[in-house]
Length: 133
Image (cartoon, rainbow, N blue to C red):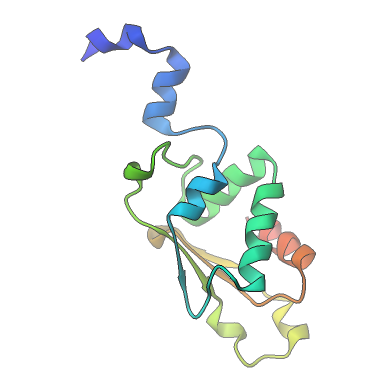
C-alpha cells in the first residue's frame, strides 16, 4: 500500500525489494549447504570464505551473479528461497594436482551452487574464481 511508502526512504525501500548492495558474507554462510564430502572445516572451504571476504563489493556482486544470476542477496534470511550449495568438483577426483589446478570453478544458477576443484593454494582459488566470474 502506498500509505507506508512515506515511512521509508527510497534507499530503504530499494533494499527491501532488491536486497543490499553489498553481499553479506555472513548471511551467505548462514544458508550454505556443503555437499560432495565438503564441510566447513575443509581447507578449501576456509580458503573460499576468506577469498569471498577479501573481495571488493563489485567482485562479490559478480560472484552472486555467477552462482545465482542475481546481483544482490536477499536482505533477510527468511527471504532465501533455497540454500547456497558449495561442493567439490567431481571431475577433479583422482587427477594429478597439476591438472586440477587448471580447472575453473563451475556454477549452476538454477540450483544456487558452486563446485570447486581442490586447488593447491588459496591464491590460485581466488585467481580461478575471479576468472570464472
